[in-house]
Length: 352
Ligand code: 8ID
Ligand code: ZN
Ligand code: ZN
Image (cartoon, rainbow, N blue to C red; front, side, top):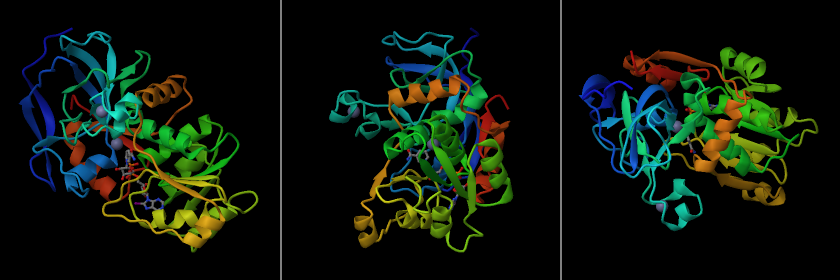
């Protein structure tokens, strides 16, 4: 293991609204219960763009190093850390740390911990070469897992795997993935397939259509920019015309959240995961009642969801397209993301 440098390169947001700047900063020192991870690759999640734009009702720290899908190698650890060794591979995810003592942490609902720290939001994240995280929360990555391809699993993968479980959909049933062409959506199709579910993909454009149908396993694609009636088209794509058993909402616009209750199957479940800025939801009370639908929400996953999602990945049943660029090019990724032009995920290489 080489010496840990004092300085490193990072992408830093000085003020809300951006831009992100590629600059040299200090390498942080891990606390007693933390590890220092040499981040090799980090996925770029739409949450990182929300953090730059400051469009959520939760302020970020400033200046901020964003990023929360970081995969790398443990290079240092605090005195209290016993179950992870220097040289092992590990991942930094959205939940950087939590108290492990509150009502929620006691029940392994650590994303709900009032003291949870959030990577790349309330604490510095993975768009830097060396990142600290609470040892109890870092994802353990087996050495046979490629660090670039697994990076998007550390937020997008865990989140959609958890959301699919929360939907209650059972093998053989049909799930609509709304925002299917994006980072969360593409992984959602792969996890759904691995869980024995059939998927209808909803998004826009021929590139995303091709990816969803040919690479990710969906049997139908509905282009929301071309469809005259999305609800009708989604229902028509199910065998008996009664709609999908569950809807996984990972879009970054409000409108699809308003539509889902209309087309979900009677007894079906709508799961909110995407976090469009300032969005509210209306659902028709009459149809919701007479169809006995469930509307619920899902927020990342706990440590067990993390290890399960990674285990699916390790077994080779989750394959998602991604493109790699240098860390210094992060702004260009945000520009494409803002325009909705990313099919799948971008991963940044912190060495460039
Ligand atoms: O724990 C959580 N709940 C969690 C975890 C991680 C991320 C929530 N998120 C949130 C992010 O903050 C973001 O708001 O999930 C959302 C999606 O993140 P992402 O997958 O990283 O975003 P993306 O890659 O930009 O994909 C969004 C897709 O939505 C499509 C876009 O075309 C894009 O492909 N989309 C939109 I905008 N409007 C749509 C519509 N009406 C739509 N797809 C279908 N119908
Ligand atoms: Zn994320
Ligand atoms: Zn707690």
